[in-house]
Image 1 (tube, rainbow, N blue to C red):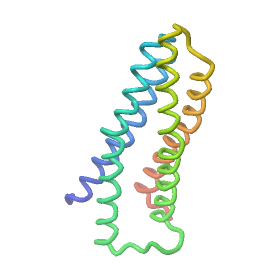
Image 2 (image 1 turned 90 degrees about the vertical axis):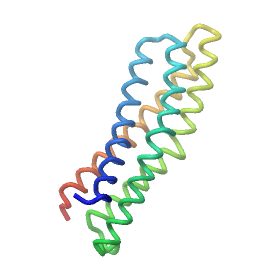
Image 3 (image 1 turned 135 degrees about the vertical axis):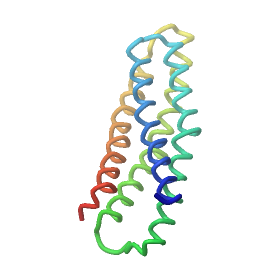
Image 4 (image 1 turned 180 degrees about the vertical axis):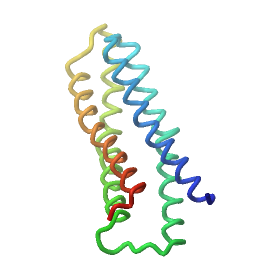
Length: 153
């Protein structure tokens, strides 16, 4: 196995592993209904995105580009690679344009929940949106992983 493929796989494991793990801890914190735990968790989900998701993303992109160039992969027409790139771009847009702002909102609203001692409707609404868009942003990389493994078309 070459260095670029190894880096690519490490990037995928870090990227996909973090998005699944972050969702697990966020859902678990919400189920506890403890404002302090929720606030700590949503802050750490945001931190984990910067420490793991973002570097995983960079590693995937750089190693993927290098391997595609080395293999002289065509980026024209619809094939497993172009479909994967399209889905990867959609995932990135969801993450940057929707999930990151929602996470900031969850941090802000959860801090207010600590002060009041109750989980606010504002937090619950932002959290629901985060869950909906987060499901899409989690399932898309799993579809991409399938396409990358099977190279089905």
